[in-house]
Image 1 (tube, protein in one colour):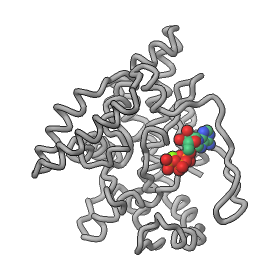
Image 2: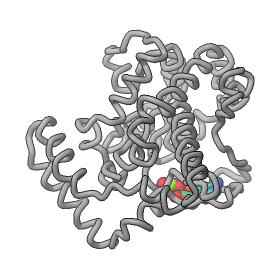
Image 3: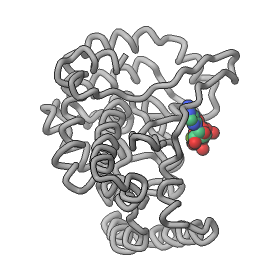
Image 4: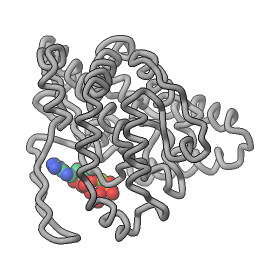
Length: 294
Ligand SMILES: Nc1ncnc2c1ncn2[C@@H]1O[C@H](COP(=O)(O)OP(=O)(O)OP(=O)(O)O)[C@@H](O)[C@H]1O
Ligand SMILES: [Mg+2]
């Protein structure tokens, strides 16, 4: 549905802005068939080909950073530790991966652009529908094109915010993701595509709202899922999606405390989302396995 809307709009159609999809056929309550996307590799593995992380060494570092941060009382000091120690001790290699993978200049340029564009489209789709769990193995990289493709859509409708360690960022925009697109993408390709995607969704808010209002079964499915938030309410989830389309950063927690942000223009909303996604204060509180420094 999101791709249909993007392909109906002249500007997003010309730029061929669309998320890569795959078919899923549910066969029973706990089983089904998923179409396997060919020629992709997990984002983590692309970094690992350069970093050659030794699993033990790496998990040792992750738990050391977590322990050190848990000793710090204020969020500011945890953010500072995250920025000055954890981020600085993590190799930043994604741009190197692009250089090695695409040695020919034209292909290199095009693939980085594709990476930024596809990451932006999926970031906004994920944000609108409250998609969490964007850890390093739920983002895949298409080896031919550099496209960023998302899999694993279980943590939808802001379920991630109700986990033991709640998710606090709207999408994955970590230092290696930014390095892959090139710093300039945050003021160029990535930002523009985020804005365009948000604009199209806002102009078609009725269609999106109608689509989600036709999803009644999800309530029952969620209720029987042990990972479901205890008081999950589909009506509430729909209201949150509507608010986000209209330009409010609405999350389960903010909404409950009634501290709703005022509706923002598309460019202002994009800036706020990028700020949130790159905030050290938010990233330092994420689950270590999400690997916020990668
Ligand atoms: N449609 C797909 N095409 C290609 N590879 C896929 C696809 N779906 C999943 N994968 C691969 O399989 C792995 C596991 O799938 P998935 O993330 O859906 O399972 P999971 O058990 O929910 O994982 P986790 O809870 O650890 O995130 C993914 O990390 C990805 O590498
Ligand atoms: Mg997964």
